[in-house]
Length: 524
Image (cartoon, rainbow, N blue to C red; front, top):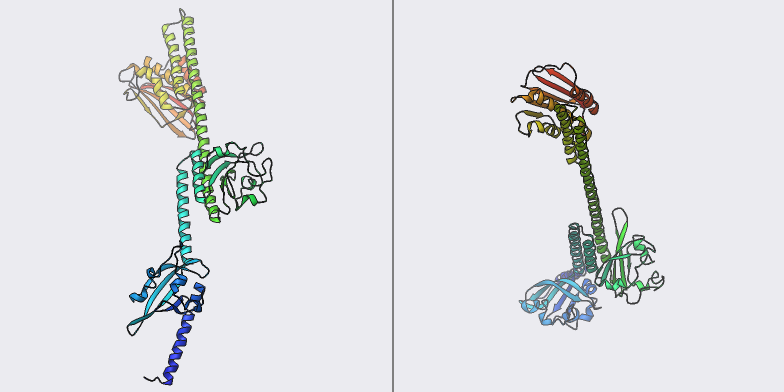
């Protein structure tokens, strides 16, 4: 059929439009014939491959840009999925690696579509997109994610132990591996005479590798890290102007581990003190990258926290041990003091027996001995509390025990009041007072009767005043004494003076009442 001129014009216009569209496409476009020779490629395809169309028209496209794998092995054309789109008459899609004209490999994403004409496959349209940047970005993200997860695991691991040696060795081992170093070390920043650095941990080499060398100093190479707290990363330390300026070796001593690549990262405490540094070496040049530096710096930050915690734990353990030794010493002194006080009271008692023999009644001797025992019991109670505060209820119970037995659950004694802590001085004074009142109750008052009851109640009256009340019930009728005896004077004058308060005795017919008012002891 003969085309009219306007049809031919329209066809030429369509071709120009199609060509313009192909030339402006962002993807690389190739048109291959049945021999897989390139008969068309757009500008993006030329930029992608480095080839001009004329260079690819005489051979199969596979032989130019897809003939080898990244490992250098041959990639036969019969195994190429792009080529298989033609004989199989089926679209092929996927990712692969192409070879640029200059020889470098790059990752691509492709779609190979067979072209049919009259039901016969006559060629292939190949669309290709360079995804190298996408893959690198994804790999970089995966690498950074892995690094963050690893650092998090390292941080968790370091916080699980407080053993300083284990922390430093673990950090050195991990940082050596992740940095790509042949060997790594942790040096403590011990500033002494000559400012020497003490080796604490070594990884990738035996400790004997440093045992024959003198400790390193704050030289021009070490100084920036150990004194200035700066990271130092050098591709070839031997070519660095700071290297080799110090006697006696002017560089590494003979037999030293081979170091060309050098990386040093400070470990700085929370308080800003440079604890030491992680130092890494490799015999090859330019081994340590910026990423290596970032990873080791992050590990050093984790290590500084763990080392700080270990130091705090060690200090706390020393303080606990010192305190325990001090408390044990105090306890020993208190026991010795208690023993000597009891010996002194026994001596006083013996002297009293010798003095009163033939000159006093047995009753007076018993009263005197009882008062000494009361003082001894109160003193023993105070000593059990290591000469610290003593509970008021405990003093009352100890004072009444010689007269009524065990106070707990005893129907003849009622103790009621809030917890009040007494100083040793107040405890001794009240113990003597309660003993005097109990002695009187046993001789004349409520404790002479089987149904007699002694109540000791105490309460905070407010305004810093404590009121203690001794109440006797169900005993014989009380008759006021004709005169004030020694016991009365001991309570009203001696006890009131010791406690800094007042003591009032009420001889009520139903039973004796003793009211003690004193300043409320401060809580200890």
